[in-house]
Length: 79
Image (cartoon, rainbow, N blue to C red; front, side, top):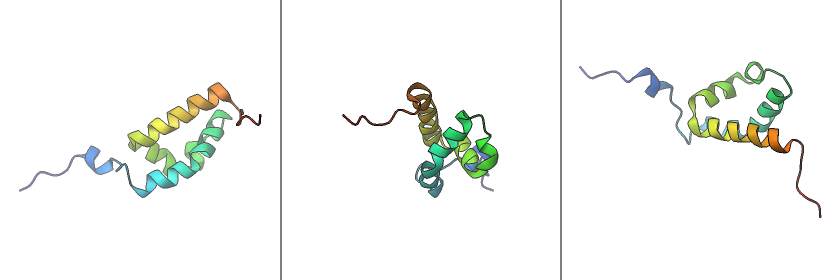
């Protein structure tokens, strides 16, 4: 009898799965809602689950949170 896969291996996100591409498209809205005091995990439960299981997307999320906290609403220079 073969060994069953671990729960972690079953729930782990593949770094190229469709969730990464779809999540990247909505990540800025997720972060904006969070920093405004909202509950983005309630509004975007699929993205919240993906961020919990995908280390690459989680790193992107944390980087975007940090950049937004540092630079706020700053946009590209027009000069």
